[in-house]
Amino acid sequence: MTKVKIQEYEATLPDSLHKLWVSGELHDILHLPDEGPRVEIIGGEIVVSPAAALRHNFIVGRIAETLRRAKDHRDEFPWTTDQNTGLTIGEALEEYIPDLVVLDEEVLDTANETGENILTPDQIELVVEVTSQRNAKNDRPRPSGSRTKSKWVSYARAGIPYYLLIDRDPKIARTILYSVPDGGVGAYLHSEEWEFGKTIHLPEPFDIDIDTSKWTTW
Figure 1 (cartoon, rainbow, N blue to C red):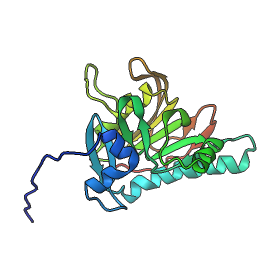
Figure 2: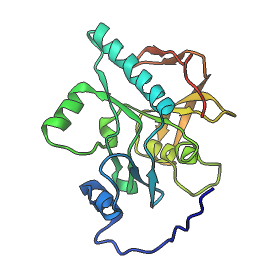
Figure 3: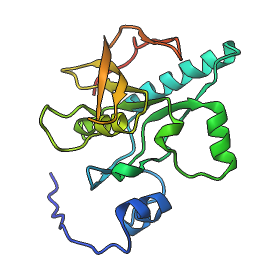
Figure 4: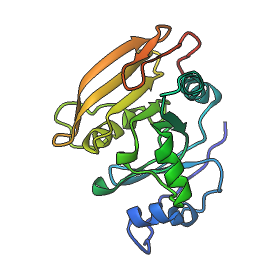
């Protein structure tokens, strides 16, 4: 066993967290390497997460692959995916890096052509988060009466139509599709659940099935 002492300290930042994150300067101020750690602002706090593990990324990859196959075989299927791009919830001053987002291919092409570095909620049709032991509470709904923020709250408040949460906690081991966001209260009003191993069906406008037979808990 190795013991280390990690000292906490206060730092004066040259601008707001929101502006520093959007500009990409926050990563440098925290002296983090360019590749690896994920830096988000959740509930007004800086959250630094390590690079995701293989089994976490396996799930994300299978979802993206399913959508790619649908696009290859259906002429009228407009959806594409993007991974690890920043998403700013501007009014809430929340800054996330979702595991996966689903958006219209034309929207993504336009964002690329105009030189956008981050996405905004109005560009996204579905957002995907896969929990890990360290950050699961940030991805899930908050208990009734809680005033703390979570991605579930912010995504609903921002009006993102669908939120697919894959909860890898061994005590849960299920996928939940949230829909019908209520921006006023910051909540999704409808949900549908599948245990790991069951086939997920994403309804219109996607109308696809996702195989979860190889998904694992942490």
